Length: 263
Image (cartoon, rainbow, N blue to C red; front, side, top):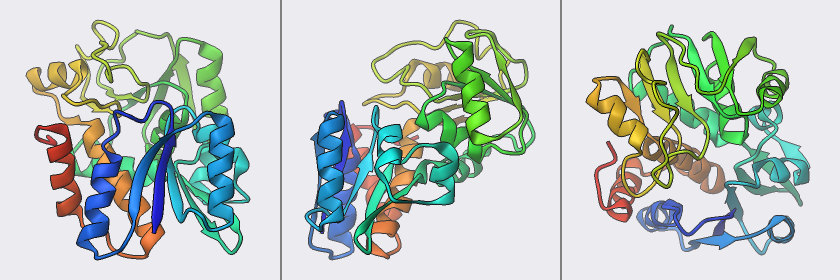
């Protein structure tokens, strides 16, 4: 089995460590490699899936929307999000899934984030769209640097909500960071977490992001990008292999790759 991660950048990703460990644990012969690609390279990889040179792929920034366009078949979550992060062959065609949606739901439950609090969602890309879909039932506030992008997200996922100014806190809301802010040590806007009910930071790096550190020091319930990476990876693995993902093995591989605890 030959699997790849497609994106730019990809050198920081822990996905190869997670999936290669899972393949070994399930005694499946194969490899999972990170491949840095532009949109042209993405299309080449999708052709490889279509004709059997690759068995599947994950897609990360900035290609989730482009991958959506290239797929002949789409899961309901991918269709609604307008973004794809998992690709596999389906009888000569390429099928796209969005495992981020299921990942958000699983992490939300495990982190015991509020089931009733409003949500302040930062961003309007593929990760933010998945978070919005998974958060259906909460009152949704979307903040983007360009307000029209936030409204376009709400229109795309067909969820009621409102657009609020970038950097403006929403008291009592769980903040979901669906942007890359924090991957390289960037801070979220000052004061955003002061009256928050929790944090779901989808960004991740080799160490906890500044937002995660701040939320933990304030005693807020926190879900991290590492939690999210593991949850969506488990869903992708099952789609490719038809096997239950060995979560303990994948979590240990993630911990080893990141040189630190997942939580």
